[in-house]
Structures are given as structure tokens and as C-alpha cells.
Length: 218
View (cartoon, rainbow, N blue to C red):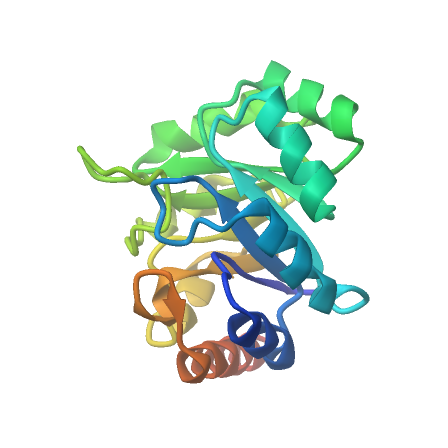
């Protein structure tokens, strides 16, 4: 089974090229004005062209209304939508039916009770992204560079398809993958020199660390 690596929060040609050259299976573009990784729909539509035939392009939004999602889908032509807000299972179902695209639902995790919330989305979400719950007062629902207790994931059914996110870096991905069993990982702030500015060297180091960790496991 393919192990996916999603590079999220891309804003420039150089960052997209570095992610694709390193072997990203997914590249993510964030549409959330308060994020330092926010990108215009037109820019994302241009940048995602480099991924055609190489990686899936993911549009990340937070509690976006129909008008916003319509503009994103029309302007970017994503392969997948990632909903990173408080969207209900009914909202996910509506989005899937409206745009005929697979949907990944982000779930914020601090303790076991947060994982229980996934049950309502089973059979609706095509995939989950498990991220650390933001601290009190944080402006961003994700991308805060914080990990959570990966041992919590041992309670998940083996058939749950999820990507692991939250505070991952080249230095801790080996430990994360020795504890959790995701089918993919998502990285953003862990490969940045400054908020929203991806560093090609850190990108390459992260991919190398993932491959090393996977080799040790397998």
C-alpha cells in the first residue's frame, strides 16, 4: 500500500517544485485569510498545474460557505477538498455531492474523546487528517506546529484511513511512525524557515527521515 506524504501550505513555485521533487503524493493549498499560508485561488490554480500527473492537489478550507467553495473548485480544480473547521457530517455529505470530489475531514485531537468524534464522519469522509487541537486563543485551527499524544491512535480501528499531522519534523517523524500507523503524513510548519516560507533543505530532510523510518519499520 502506498504511503502518502502531503506537503501543505504551499505558496510559491519553488516550494511546489521542492515538494514534488522530494516525492510528495499530495500538495495542499490553504484558503483561510488569517493563515500565513493563505493563497489566492488564482495563484493556487496556477501552482497546481505543476502537480498534474505527479501528485494530487488538495484545497484546504475552514468552515467555507458554498460561494467560497465554488470559487475554489472552479479556480483551482483540486483533486480533493480538505475541510478543517467544524463542518458537520451533513455538511461533508453536501459538499461531496455538490462537487463530486473526495473529502478529507480534519479532526483536532487532544485526548481520546476527540477521537470519538470521528465515528459520526465514518462512511462520509473519504479520509481523516488528525491534527493537534489548537491551544486556547489560537487563531489557526491547524498549522500551529504542535504534536499530540500519538499513543492515543492505538485505539483506532485498523481500517481507519488517516493522515497524521501536527508538529511533525525530520527529528520526530521516526518516533511518530513507530507509535502510530497512519497511511500518510501531512507536513507544513515543520519544513518552514519562517511562517509560510518553505525551506527546500528542510523539505528534503523530512522526506529522507520518513523513508528512513519506513525502512526501519518494514
